[in-house]
Structures are given as structure tokens and as C-alpha cells.
Image (cartoon, rainbow, N blue to C red):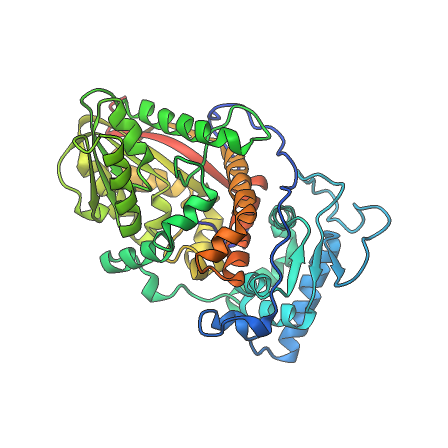
Length: 463
């Protein structure tokens, strides 16, 4: 799963038939433990060079950033100075007029800026990358991080004056060529995230070790319901692909093996592909422990090298790691792997088409620190590339609010497991980075900037 820069207009809105229950109001700000404090002087400069040092920025550029950022945050009534007391008066004062919010209005989230000079210099020099790095450095905090980020995402179109948006090239960087998803690059990019540590993911995921949106029956969701919600999501995908006894199933993107296990329990024969050595090792252990090694073949293989024809293909939140340059190859591989009459069940995070076009050319905080080489597609891009490969979209259902709840549960579990994460060698900067990533992602879905879709694709015009 990957996340976008909040940089453009035409926010994505869910369309089509909703999956599962109708969207309901979110459960409110996730009550998590306070972020671990960090002093920039204590940051490991070898591991986090761009967090340990504050970048240089000319006085004029910094002043412009201060004017724009402080003005936007004040209009949203988001900030207070470090050591200041809670704001009095009406919480709605200073909000952008005429723009409703889906977040609870009382209490409103608060951002506390501990080092305004560093905060403004980072944003002046590196835009949203600097905003995230400032959080990693402990230069600002929030009493409700996903709430603050959701509010910013909801009002992203009003944060920067329209004429200045045309000058975004002055503070954004192009994506590094080293992050391209060539065969070697894709392997490196996947391993930089998924090979961090199986124990890290075990610390905050549910027992299924499923790292994608769950499908709940009631909101607010509870962590105790997450395992069943993940099985519900998996079962719906397997049903879409008509996976049953004797089905030859190809899975592109193994994760830690839960979908393959569930398909094999139905009687399917599963070939599942991953580029993560850590995931492959644990998935094989789980398959062996379940006594299903005769039905599941876990392969360290690039999707472009898939072999054979299959009755069904399932790929869950894999397209986001492919990169737009290789989407034609991805859909061609899906089509090539499909036996006549076969079905493809695809789960994908999506964003608005204009946001996608802006993000595709931009190096973001997420692409720098979390998902190198990744890009979330738009529904338009999926439709165009799948059709070009000879595939027809039969169903397309969205359930974004469920992803917001999934991410909230992961984030709350992660913050509750800080001692475990620290014992794995993940320092305070890493913990703040990971919490920011989970909160940033949650905000994308709560604000409807992002959606998650389950699609059914078939060859040509076959139903």
C-alpha cells in the first residue's frame, strides 16, 4: 500500500456500489499514546541525515513559507505555540468559510510547533517532505495527528493560493531515477519496506498478518474484530474470482500468505509471487504449518516473469508498488496469465486523476521514506491500462471508510507496542516516521482524498 502527496485539486470521491456496509461516520480521533519525544541533537545523523540537519533556506523563501503555512494553519484553527494553553473562544473561528468538515469539531485537533524556525525552513526548502521530516525531528506534534492531517487533506485546495500552485516546481523535487521499478529496482524497493522485519509487522497487524484494507460489519471497529474483517475481505475477493475446488489460482503479491492459505483451504492450487525474501520465508512457514504445502507454491518472482495460465488471478494492493511506467506491463501480465474464461479480482487504492498526474512526477515524503517507487493509480488509469491489455471491468466497488478504520487500528496497536518496536532496533525517529505514515494514510481515507476499490476484470467482453 502507498500514499500520495496532498498537492492537487479534484479530490477522489467513492463511486459505484459500496462494498459491505454503507459508509458511517468515523469513530473520532484515535486515542493513541503520545508520540515519543525526540531531540534533533540526539538524531542519528548517519541513519537520518536529512532529519538531523535543518536545510538551508534563503530569508525570503523562508518568510514566504512562514506566511503561507501559518496563514493556512491559522485559518484552520490548528496551531498553538509550544507551551501555550488551549485556545479559548469558538473552535470554528478562522476556518475556511463554506467548507464543511467530517471530523468532530470539539475538541478540534491541535498542532504544537516546538521549533518554528526549523519547521518553516524545512517546508520552504522541501515542501511536504520537509513537513514530514520536521515531525520526525520532533519539531512539531499534535494531540490528534490523524485528525490534524485529515483537516489539512480536506482543505488542501485552499491552503495555497491558486496562482502559487502553478509554481509548485519551485519546492517539489522530481522522483529519483534510482526508484524506477525495473526488475532490479522493484526488488530493491519492495525489500526496503517489506524486509524491514517480520517482527515489526507482527507487532501491529492482526494474527492473519494481512496488510491491506479490511471489511468490517460495524463502526467504530475494534481490534478484536480485525481478523474476521480481513477474512471477510479475502473471501469476497476469492468469491469474485470464483475460487473453489480445483481452481488454478495465481496471486501477485503474497504478503505473508493469508489469502493463499484461505484459497488453498477451498481446494484451490495456488501459485503466489513476491519479491520480499522476508515475506516469502514466513509465508512458506505458515503454509507448511497448515499442511497445505502440496497446494501452495510461494515463489520469489517478478510479476513480469509469470508462467502458465490460471483460472483466476488475484492481486491485492500490488498495483500501487508497480509505478505508472510499468502499469502496461502489469496489466499485460495479468491478461497473459489468464486462461480462457478466467477472472481477475483486483484490490487497489485509488486517488483522483489530477492528483495522480501531479504525484507521478513528484518525489514525496512517502516515496522517500516509506514506499520508494510507488504510485497510487486513479480509476481512470486503471480503466485505460486494463482495457489496453484486453481486459473488461465487470465490477468496481469502493469501501474507503473501512480503510480509515483499518489504519486507525494499526496505528493504535503500533503506538501501544513501542517497547517491542524499540527492542527490534527501531529508534525514536523511525517510530515517529511510522506513526506519521499510518496517520497520514488514515487521513487520506477519512478526508475521501483516497478510496480503495475491489474490481473484477475479465477477458474481452465475457461476463
